[in-house]
View 1: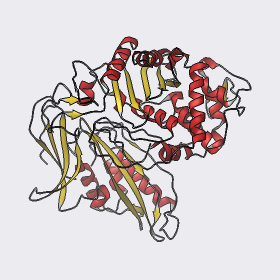
View 2 (view 1 turned 90 degrees about the vertical axis):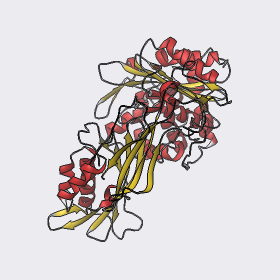
View 3 (view 1 turned 120 degrees about the vertical axis):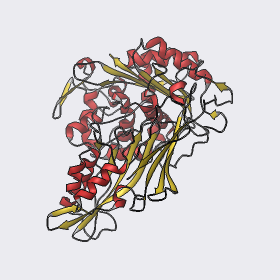
View 4 (view 1 turned 30 degrees about the horizontal axis):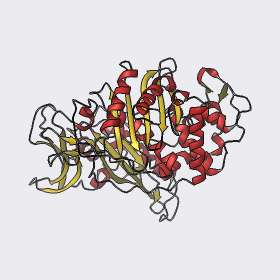
Length: 531
């Protein structure tokens, strides 16, 4: 295989990387996430557990880069290992995720496990697709039935993949009102939109193995509108300026990210990062959301009728579920109501409520009402979707209820969560107008729940942990969050907030608390906007 690459900073017309067919070796950070198992509707019997375990083990080995082990789990080890090794050779793939779906029995001697693959191609975006793993009983035990389409539906003995990369000319962009915006005026937009320099674009093509003829395009990368006039964004120049000023003023050189979007449409009006020209943490970061996640778990508890704001849920200093959980500064509120637990951000109360929700209920609720965990969000620029895995045990379930454990989000996700909670309707975030978005089907939160969430977040500002925003005019509601990174290290500080028009989320790394770090950022931004 011949691979041609040039430096990302050079101007180039087209760079072609031929992809013979899987994940690049040396992928220490790769992961596989397992979904719940249940028999398929069309299956005559429940899939044999050993067959399902074999399929999962195959996917886990593939994702971990142990391609020899993955090959040994198939009925054609040498061919499987070789094909997996060649599939995406030459691509810069970081942390791809393979997610198995519900297993389906194939008679009494087989099973099929569908899966989705999300492979982030460095500097371009995420290549997402779905396929399935078939497993059969053999004399040697359960083995994956090796076939080309297992790796990707369009991979075969006659066709392979080819990556074509090119760098667009320097981008010009306009804000939501059609006025020009630049990196000189808005430094954060340099990294987010590629302003001030060429921006990589590309596509993965399906080509004939012999002739090289292009058969189809598997995925395209790059901003909508690139190369065809200015990039039409949803940015509000005034909000963007206020966000960048507030972030620079209060983060003191710490890494941070902020997203503000319109509640009524999901359109992003501001995205800022610290440092301004660095990594786009606001859209591509992966953080535990801390107690800001209680907005979503509270929605699930309230929608189910498991609690009301006046329900008594004690808030002790400590609660042990496999490990000892505690509140910030080991505070406690004896005889607390759920309202008090929320506005003062009591972790142990939420841990105590874990039995009110099923193991996979928050995962399903996030998808059903908040658009998280299903189809990929397409904003027009590179972004990383949130991960809300089903907890593996009671300890992990307890941690996830207050935003810890294996949860992964970013300011884009949490701004959307806030907008959905206070409006009742999920609206897919958008930054570049004209971006083709897949329809994400969600249900509307009941008005009763929306009213309760708005009241709880408003009370958090007037009487609770977000009093840093109390001086702002109008109805401003919020939720603070402090996410542990290590047991003895600094935390990440979070704050999400809403007013009459926008929802905002901010994270500041290496912070003591959300109210003390992200709070002043959002306060100053909203104050400058006259809110």
